[in-house]
Amino acid sequence: MATADKKILVLGVGNILLKDEGVGVHSLKELESYNLPSNVRLHDGWVAGIDLLEVIQEADKLIVIDAVDAQAEPGAIFRFAPHQVETMVKGHKTSLHQIDLFETLKIAKFLDKCPETVIIGIQPKLIDWGLELTPEIRAVLPRVAEIVCQEIEMS
Image (cartoon, rainbow, N blue to C red):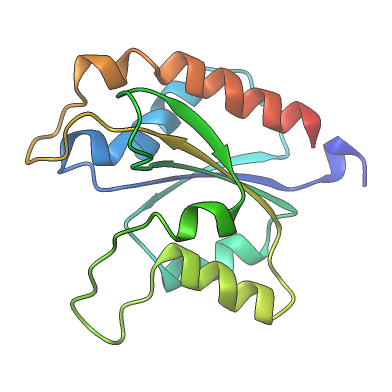
């Protein structure tokens, strides 16, 4: 499938109420200023899980941007496949009915509707109440956008 024919979904996830935890969503705002191809869709996934199944199934390639605690320097950027980052996630469910992004990807795979997926993870500095990213994390947003654009070009 040619790049222009591929439906590419860039999914920014995270909680913008918890400072650097929201880096995925803040990255989408950075990407909005780029001249992206018409087959690329930016989507704010916030902290949604199973609600993302429909939008994920429509994509041929999924690029997820999220905060990932890799025990690295704040602002470090990583590229992962879903199975590599799933073990690092420390999600705490408040309900047995709560389904996170990785479980949603497993469901999509089970339904044979899971797109090629890559995760761009950013090491947060501070996850605490607040709407703004820390300066260290805000400073890497242009680099995150460049990496996402490279992923789009490689599709």
